Image (cartoon, rainbow, N blue to C red; front, side, top):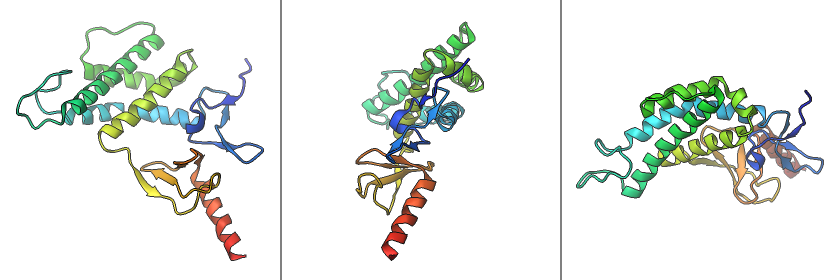
Length: 212
């Protein structure tokens, strides 16, 4: 079977962009739904899923881990934040359980929420190529990436730690940022994503140009 080459399903958020004939940053073209590096990102989400779920659970006060429960006089986070944390925990359980059942061909009943998260996230990680090859694979992959981003935001882990010193190579704005734990930089004005090696080459070109 010949697979048609098409842009990575993450679009402008592709972590391994390439350049078109005009030098613009575009999603990497691939024979699979996601490029290799974005597929690795989805696999990493499934690896981290249980740990993040546990951190979300730990962020809740004892005795208030049922959706919508109110604990009078507790030192709990504000109710909207608690509800968002609980919703995010249940969302992961639903995501991995539903998609594992679709790939597996049947459901596994009568499991606690944390057991579902542990078992089904690992099952999907092992069978990731089968998941992404399905008609719903792109939606599943994007949903998992979105889940991790939201979970990390709720836990205070998703922050920009470095503002790059060079201007954006596309719009010239001083708005290049790099997230904690990521190699790529993103412009907060035009949205271009550039790899670390591209950034280094860009800085070298600017430096050489200034020396002329």
